[in-house]
Amino acid sequence: MRSGHGVCPNLADVHTAHGTKIPRIRIGVLGVITIAVYGSWYYSFGVLLDPIIQDTGWSEPALASAFGISTLIGGFGAMAGGWLLDRLGSRAVFTLAAIVGMGAFSLATTAGSLGVFTLAVSVGGGAFSALGFYHVTQTVAVRLSPGSSTRAIAILTIWGAFASAVYIPLTALLVGRVGWRLAMLAVTMSAVLTLVVGALAIETRTGEMPRGLHIFSEIRTALGQRTARRFLLTQGAVGMAMGVVLVYQVPAMTAAGLPLAAASFWAGFRGFSQLLGRLPLMLIIDRLGVVRSLRLAYVAMSLGTIALAFAGNSVMAAIYAVVAGFGIGAASPLVGMFSRDVFGRTSLGTAMGTVSLVFLVVGSLGPPLAGWLSVATGSRDIPVAVAGWLCFMAAWALPLPEEV
Image 1: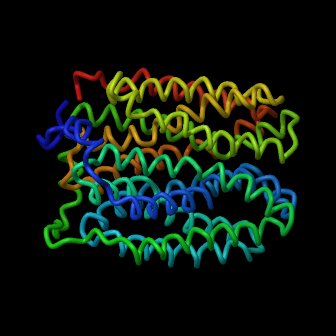
Image 2: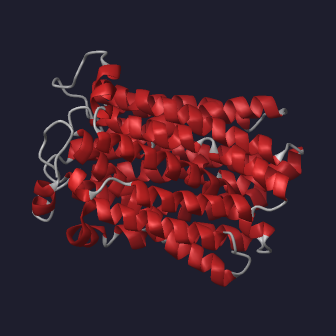
């Protein structure tokens, strides 16, 4: 393999992964940040959707659009977040995420109108997405472990697999006991706390970091590669699919007949099942390589998402949880490894921010389109099935291994 900046790829990492130490405590802190930042909004919203509708009377398409707008802001912000990380280091990025997220979501929990709620969650969710998602934490992990970055990414994403497993059932429990407003406030504060700890415990700023403002020239360099452009195309398709799945995994199961507690359990178990794609990941990569492994992950996501469209009973819900969980679990670290191999390491934060920009911005179209399609057809199964088809198309469109 080759990288976009002429850097030898991760083969060295593969050979040294078992012999090079990584800073486990700091990688663990990054893992807890990943769990809380993803879980507190990205995963919990699907649980909050119906309780918010029942309490406020706000429409489903409008609330799905609010989630989509937060994803859109997070996508554009991801590029800036990665750029800030390359120049100011992790402490500044985590601190900014904590301040903006705390203020915005605190406003959302007291909102009396749909407009205020949409504005608040758009800013809060966008800040968490832009400044705390994998394009940030994986880049920090690479910089903390320059001699074993593949292993560092793999370990970080094993932590991240617990995000939905923890936060989906936790949010459902809190909603049942204290209502959606206090539930949202509680999960937000948990994310803010982890970001503060991360800001205190980790700093990646060095004297050798780039200082210029040439963000657009860096992006143009990366996008000059056909491989990079095809990769970004797949990220847009998978982003749309994941947006639909995250918003509708619980509502689709409850609409099909499962109680909220059972649907939340299987949605959380889907998150736990991500470990099936992460624990054996090094073995899978050794056998298939990064590109073929990512294709396998997307096919699994496709099959699992299609199962979700029929998840009116525990058998189909379990198939969704296990198969989609494996695919999503494997895909997250593989996207980081693929990005590193294609774009190189010098401006990895900016490059991965660009990948997240496409994933989140194009993905932001998924929830509102799914909400419209659900209302128009009277079925939540149809948008979910379309999401499964998008994952299959992404697997087909990935660059060939020899092109990377």
